[in-house]
Figure 1 (tube, one colour):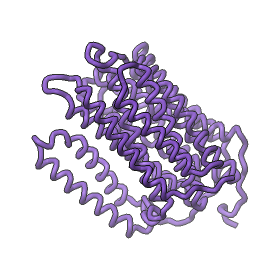
Figure 2 (tube, one colour):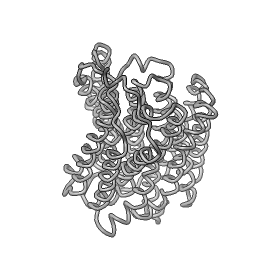
Figure 3 (cartoon, helix red, strand yellow):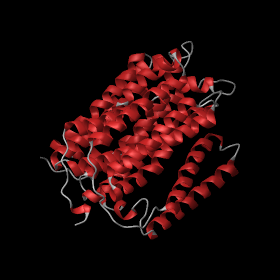
Figure 4 (cartoon, one colour):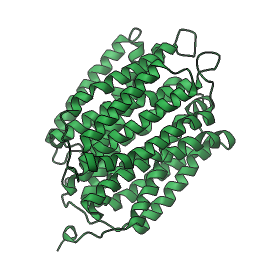
Length: 465
């Protein structure tokens, strides 16, 4: 008999806990740039455009690595691929920690982006080693801990960078990733390969998707300068259309596509992807704008906060995000995914509207950001849980990868749009954007998120257990 027919080895809380520890460690490593971006820009003499590139580099890499990681996990075994992926992440963290300049730091972030692929691989292991009911809760817990791991990174990055150095703020979570990886390798049993095909990796699809994402980021970055560079922007838009067309054509013909467009055509899949994209765009706008608003000088309309203070102000949001994962998983199990997603969207729209209207005190921003983090965690966890448990176990990695790719692309698009809004709203000769630029960003994010309520009506209510 082949290994694929062997009965699964059920795991205990210790093994699932090891996956949770790895999720916390990778979440911490992912989050250190956000509260310290002003400090990094200052120490490495980065322009705003270079700072925006640094903030999304990890997301772009994650969008490319995630579907490959999920497919390899389904084909060769989740644990085997997860351990190798974490070796790449650990190398990236060490490169970032030792980086003497921006190009080397960007290389480190490129390698660190592989951490996004850890989630679908964790879901594969959970689905193979736990009963169906327990796997839903476990997926929610692991997802929440990955997001909530940002709590440690967000809170500690500023003090570590200011008191020790920017090098240590990357080194410490990298050490935690290495330790958690060793623990997962020891406690989690090997899962048998789920597929035996030898169709290989869809390298043409990967190359075209890479070109699509990079070109999209360039288009969004240059959008505020359309008046001075219309030909360049027009050429990039045409190139973007060519990349998208070519990618779709290649994926439809590929024997083993990187992104299975036939799966994406399923109602449950495209609904989850559309909602994930819109919700993450709405979330990433305040994720980018709120720290920038904290850093605006106090003699203008901001608060003049440094990296340590910004990290402290963002902590309640990280706590809310860590709680949202388990709550979203349990809520999806009891009330159905549609109810949880709808509740999350309503909370997010209300918080964005409040931030656009009132943002003159620190607590306004702290509470608004926390509510948005909670709402985003509820929505994403419910959609990932619904998607991962609505397909065959052998398709778990690919299905969850589709949603996670949409998640990181949504975050990257939202961040670039936010940067474009601030750039367009900065008066000539000033380094401080007009207050109206922040209001515009919050309003646009709220309006886009509200429109997603039209899509939630097409979701399945989900099976209550």
